[in-house]
Amino acid sequence: MDVVVIGAGQAGAALVAKLRALGHQGSITLIGDEAAPPYQRPPLSKAYLLGEMEEERLWLRGPDFYAEHGITLKLGEKVSLIEPITRKVMVGDEVISYDELVLATGSYPRRLPSNIGGDLAGIYTVRSLADVDAMKAEFAPGRRLVIVGGGYIGLEAAAVGAKLGLDVTVLEMAPRILQRVAAPETSDYFRALHTSRGVKVLESTGLERILGEDRVSSVRLSDGTELAADFIIAGVGVLPGTGLAEAAGLAIENGIKTDEYGRTSDPHIWSAGDCASFPHKGGRWRLESVGNAIHQAETIAENIMGAQVVYEAQPWFWSDQYDCKLQIAGLNVGYDNIVTRGPDGDSVSFWYYQGDTLLAVDAMNDPRAYMVGKRLIENGKSPSKAAIENPATEMKSLLKA
Image (cartoon, rainbow, N blue to C red; front, side, top):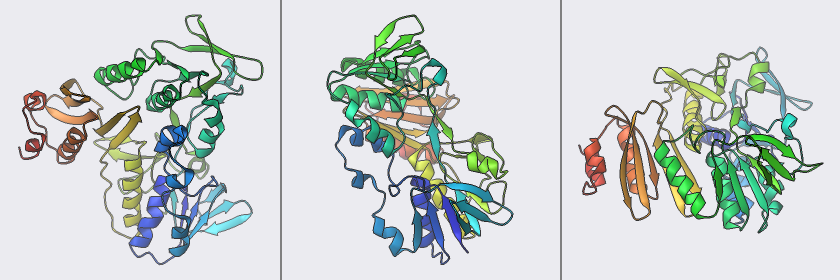
């Protein structure tokens, strides 16, 4: 059985390694459009941008791993066509046959519209090594950075800018930063954290126009204010990489539509990671996280080998900003009340409930709350809110209740 994987990110790398670990004897080809071997993306907007991590440390595995395990690694190459009927993919002039194909094509960042000046030089996104390498030289003390979008990517870039001595402004069109992904309590925590480091956070503020000749020089805000800007980082979300799947006639629904096993509408094509949507709790979900990419990819590897394992999402996320480590367990969709534990020093956690059912936990500098919350959610347990709020409650005791 010959397996081809398109997309050499976290999901693709996890899947090919798992296939060999499970004893797959056929050929495996992993195709990626970047020149670098599969690498971690989360440190790009943090340690790598700060210059605290070399490129080689981003690599998920040493380059020798793939050769030693009989995995053909095609880097810096793009698949131009998938032919589901003949089970072939086109890479340049090369035709590669497959028995099973996996689409791990990830996601790509939204760009600022060209009709407001989004095509000027000096505007960046944070998604790939090339993106960060292109902007690194901009991070010099005293330079003026405007970040469009108050999500985690934007806030992580703001933290790097502030640490390196830049004049940083974050623009958020919504009434508060992190509005789409977090409770007001978490938004308040991070707004205070950033403003304490000198970052200007402008909420309910849209971007009307980017000004400059060939390169950005300033921005005009929705209230008419103009801000000088030496460069801009756009953190306005991502879109699933569905282009190849759509051209191949696969079903698309908030990403590449898969069943509970990770199989697409074509029985010999699977999909994992940011690009894939899957059935979960009566709906259809798409998760942009390392944990999902790995777990989903490894489940698909098992299913390619005939296991028929249902994919059960166990969401977890994290974000590093300054000396704060945010860890998130679960999904907060549908919450109607928040329980706060702490603060205790620089640690605090916010627990999302729907009625009396625990959905998710945001833990700031509180790994114990995160680990306990994660296990509770995975085991379907919901501790009493009074127990969470009570500082005398031993966290481990909640697991025994």
